[in-house]
Image 1: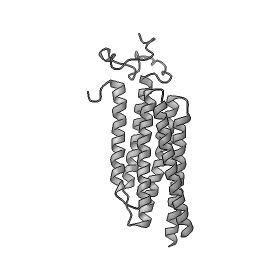
Image 2: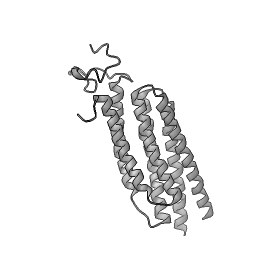
Image 3: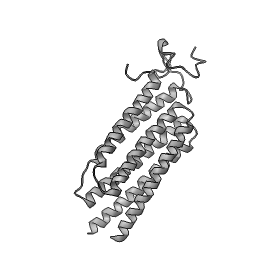
Image 4: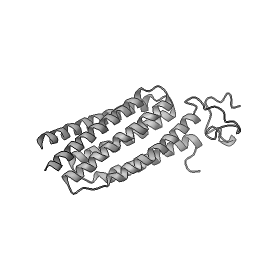
Amino acid sequence: MSFATQLMDTALIIAFIVAVLAQIMSMIRLVLGPSTGDRILALDTMVVNAIGLIVLLGIAQGVRIYFEVSLIIAMLGFVSTVAYARFVLRGDIIE
Amino acid sequence: MSGDIIMTYAIAISLLVGAIFALVGAVGLLKFNDSMTRLHAPTKVGTVGIGAFLLASMLHSFTYSEGSMHELLIMAFLFVTAPISANFMAKVNIHRRACDTPPEPPRDDTWSTLNVPEEDKHVAPEPGASHHV
């Protein structure tokens, strides 16, 4: 049991580090991004990685209340991505 | 007892797989050199990585507490909405001409993404509007 638990804890730490690295990389792309589409893509990736970070936090603390947080962030992220893209495409969000 | 050990190994493996996928998606977003190519890395690979994290969370809740399938909802929502937002961002790239424009359609005058009405030209300008007149 102990080796499996140790492996899970190590994997959790690795997953945390990777999620933070992914968040930093997409932040760099958000700053660099030559075109508007790249910046929208970087923001969308940051939302998805934030969901991953919150899920990992829920695993690490062993609590179930982070489910609602990640669900709301997922829905808001999709809506905001579509709103950004619609604003660029149409010049307006609600016509 | 041995079931718990197997489930713990499964959690560790799905966490590692998710970490690899998320890292590959983020590196692809950072290192690719074209807007349309960059679109592919996080919208597919990164989403699969987060899906593996959610699977690990589901297995963890089944192993260490009474268990719940709630993460399936987030997973389904992410997997359904990722292609839709990728399609929207590809449309933005074509619209802003940040990529190669697709070849002209055979019968219509232009693609609908590039077809900006005359009264919207001031809010949606075309950066490379030379051939469009």
